[in-house]
Image (cartoon, rainbow, N blue to C red; front, side, top):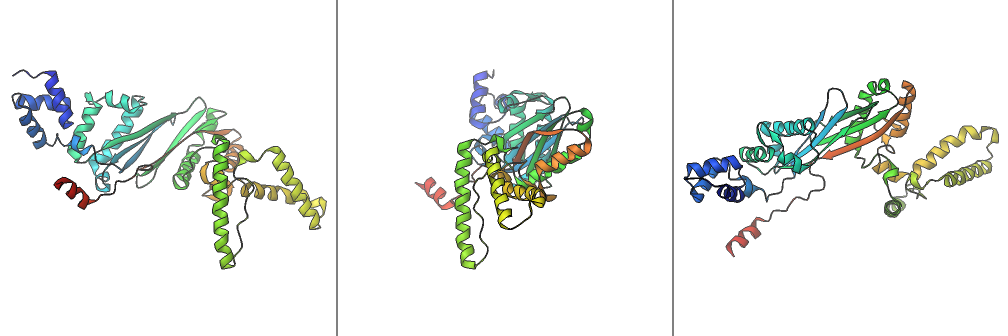
Length: 354
């Protein structure tokens, strides 16, 4: 019996199996649709579609950095269980997908589905992997960063492969870029641990900063209520939350206030220039708590908590006699933003019996 394209399409839509697998099953079943479904199910290829409605919120993150440190790609593929995430076949799938994305300059999931891998469409290849592994799998996201001239990229994957980070830097010369690979790697490690959301406060808008400042103020005031009860020192409530709010006028006013305090304390003006820089730094730190929580450059470095990442970068650039600017930052953590569906077995059984 001749197998038509419409028959293959119908079987594929009902089972989720690959196109060639559907065609072979129909040929083996001599065009009998129900028998073809049974053949696919017996081979484990008809299970993928039914798994697709189950939430995949476990999985792995993979990072691949090119040999010349000019291109880096990060991918997250989700599975349903942590057990499968440790499966060697799944680990290879995630790594190979990342390499495939980078090698073929793929930028969207649709492009990925239509691309070819091992002589077949990626979508069909991926469905066969779902059938082999036995769980719903989802290529959730991927991103590639590229260095421009005089630039360099670095990547880090945490030991559990659940967190990955990419950072790209622009430098004044290829010589500087060639010397900061290890430095950027440690910044990636910092970001993996401290979870900054953006590179700099310059990416915040005024409305977001104001909203977050009010939340921060409320949080500190609430904690102060407990500190009063415990008779412990209270948090100082900041005037601001981000460097974006610290205009030249604000800093100038703060400086004058600090000078007035020194005057009241009877400190000789001759030594003010030794005292004021540290006090201004403290004022800025107290009033940039949003940056310290959410921005890479504003956070204090885990390997030297007396300095911000911005200060550490400036020191590294000075040591090398060059310039370094962080221009790209990506952080993936498995399952972030996904809500796990709460399973109610009793309700599920009741629904089926109704």
